[in-house]
Image 1 (cartoon, rainbow, N blue to C red):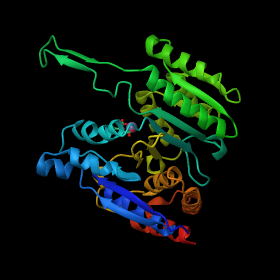
Image 2: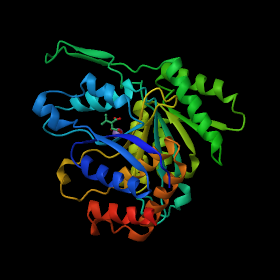
Image 3: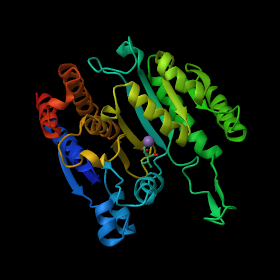
Length: 348
Ligand code: IPM
Ligand code: MN
């Protein structure tokens, strides 16, 4: 037990976001942590009501927290990309969360679409760059709606941005038993950006002689995720490839209902943000049908990041036990019942 109180900002957001986040908070409290929690009304409801997405005053308030827990963003009633760009990506960019950490782990008892795969074979840490690549608004549209329309969408890769995420990935690889880092890119076609990534990783790898590094093209990596997942330990990749690869990884590891993620600012100049990889799932929103496991595992990552390793381990252990017990029979419980069961395990 700890007496420390965490200043936690909570953005439930859209769809199933608020439901799953409530369970993550329940489980965090079950560790004995004191939460000084502030809920922020951001997402489609606020946008529809007021036209606001992320007011600067809210951004300033969020900056004063130890961490942000986010549920999901996006709703069919809001035009595509408004909330994604204006809320989720803006938070990642403004708080300089350049490390998007996404573990891909197959827990014992969870069934993977891969047949005959051993849980130990799927244990990777994907480190997706979070502030650059094609996610930056570089480009534009000319002659919109005409037959001569031109749309460009550039991918921005800087020596600074690639260097800092590559260094972080090497550090994480050095801490893991296998000490292996794979750079995933598409340097046979995206020759400029690919070259920068490859040279950067190779240059920094000289400082980490204990880590073995390899390179893999994105398309080949997609194949290996399905045929030889044991190939990978730590992966570093750009924002867009990382988005795709971690969705595939989530599927391999038992579905997006289990995939956790952390948007980390390693220098701690601003809060980091923790969110399940799944989206808002509007079709099942409010029905207590969503699996809160991804949100709960994201809360464990939050604890780990703010130095509460013991609490993080307890939450993860409780999730692992729950996954083993349920044996794929997820739908038998509601969102809250699953949270209750995991919270009970955590409380011991
Ligand atoms: C994710 C999501 C986001 C992304 C979207 C909603 C902006 O797909 O977190 O993986 O592309 O990063
Ligand atoms: Mn995604």
